[in-house]
Length: 205
Image (spheres, helix red, strand yellow):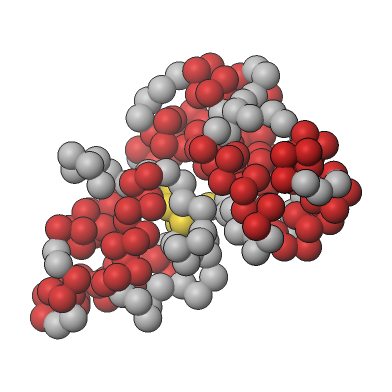
């Protein structure tokens, strides 16, 4: 967390290997894992950061880890964990593969969501056939390469949209050929358009 910036509206609560929504989400997830190591959800999930959850996370990140073991700090952690377990989740998640070649690809796509290399190109980079990579992606993440990349792009887009950046600019930055293609993908995954999603968040519903 830099300069008191709020976490993104989507945060992955998984293990350190999970793919967070953005850098703020990464720091928040790390802070939670240190202060509530036994209470976090056992399966990685992207949670919707409500105003209450946002303030709880910001307050928690101000406290040293030892201050959350008892007293007011422990009560703060308990409320936060209730919010994580009971609050709504986003249908966006990036499972992390075990295969080193796939991890290399995933890391590159998270760093540059606009990357459009196909599996044939990646195969030449990591020394595996496209068919092998496709099979491993499906087996280790439960989704195909194209679906995984789309999830990565949408997760990268969420904090940009939350900052009020135009859909046109965001869609281009995360690799979509047009704003309409981005909006269609967003709607398929989240059920509403980006504008509707963030207006609903602003209204608390």
